[in-house]
Image (cartoon, rainbow, N blue to C red; front, side):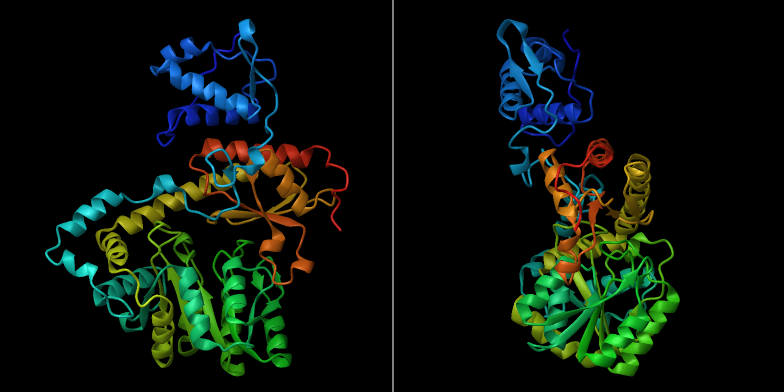
Length: 462
């Protein structure tokens, strides 16, 4: 029989025919459209949506190209029943892939850029933002970032703030200032892939620190420093990426003592700290003379501006500034001006509060939809992602491939492992990247159905 299906279109689905095809794919994936269902005649759907017949014709043709439907002449257009059409796995980065691999903040909660640009344009000195700023950033931008850090429990003097082009750049600059090729850097055995890339580019050797559900193990760090010439420790103490662990205060204190006793530098990646209502003490507060504290506006406010900053001890500021100038000269002042304005007028605080609420709602959905799939879910209500430990019948790589064939991207554990040969059988799911909870639900249901069903042959984890 004819289905009375109507696509649910978002505000950001241009061109419209692709938005209709995407809505159709999502409804097939979640079972709202079933094999054999007949779609509305093209003219009928066009009239119902108030759009041109040509747009609907293009949408149906696109859906057929993807294998979702098939035109049958007089019988109309029928759903084929393939929730993951051939070729969908190749649509990496397209609007049709439900991307749970990329750790991006929810775009619909981004601050109003147009209002921020108008505010900048009204400044009498706006033209000065087109000139070269000082290497560490304009004073008012450094003051704003120091205020942002203090608002989240990190003691900060503007004199110690160095502006960078995002946290990834700040990490690269910190490593460049502290280390020389061949030096050894310790980090959690699972870590941010960007630091792996940075160490590889700089000729540094990463040494893994074992961790448990609460984060890195200080006694194992102590042991590592005793037997290896560790130059620096890179760590993510708040909402660890990828496991979401938050390092307890006593462990932070132990890490600070080890660094002081062993003469080791600390690079504290703390850009997710604003998401925590009650974050632990910053390492830069416990060992200020040997900690570079890295933060960014990317995850808390908006990723595309690429505004980051590092809080640097006095004795390292010249070396950090030189490393900065070797890679970028200076952070673009216009981007920093926008972020500083949001901090000053309260937009930043309101955005963080909204992201916290949305994050908690998405975490609840993840637990509800994944609780019976046979995997172990580890996370925090305030984290953008969850760590899914898989049953023995599934390997992380096979689940990643099978999920992508069904239009869902996930990040297998080897991406985060310092020693990829010893990667756990797990995947990270980034809950914040989908633009809507409805899209997130479709992706999570797809994964739950995969894990609950029989695993393909040859998938057992080794």
